[in-house]
Length: 195
Image 1: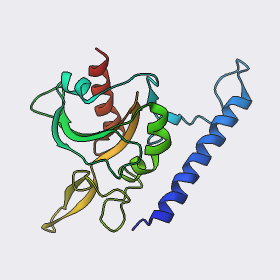
Image 2: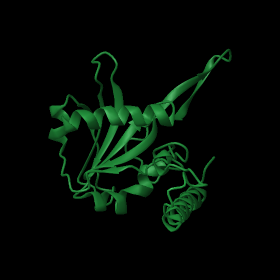
Image 3: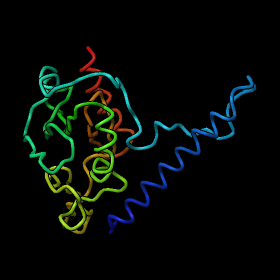
Image 4: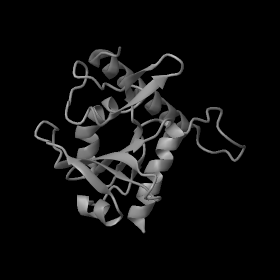
């Protein structure tokens, strides 16, 4: 079980690694002689994608592209958030995925005030129980059940979201059973928003 202190330490360690990688890449520069000795793509790290920093999105923008609201969350304890929603969307109306949206005044507010709690809702450092989560609203929606083959039982604390990204002033939670699938699902929704 992951404790909040351990989660904070893991988040700090990941951020430190990212900073070191970025500083190393910047200091190496380009000599035209090929790739860097360290080929880590920072977009492979959960929660690092930030697009359209000046864009102001509302829930109506998501509704326009077919997002269906299941629940509007109470954000009174979600610092600086204006709104939050749980719902579903998909290119194929018969294969829709669950998403969570958290809307802030700006992308900088979303990053400053929403990153820690967004990280807690996603793999690999998910805190999805009433004993571990710091924001309890919607934790049941953020989990899925997964059976153990041949054992006849399931565990229902598997994270539904494997990534999150900052799209304008919104934190968008990406569903999927792997990081690659989660990124693809969010990218499809962002593409629809951009059309």
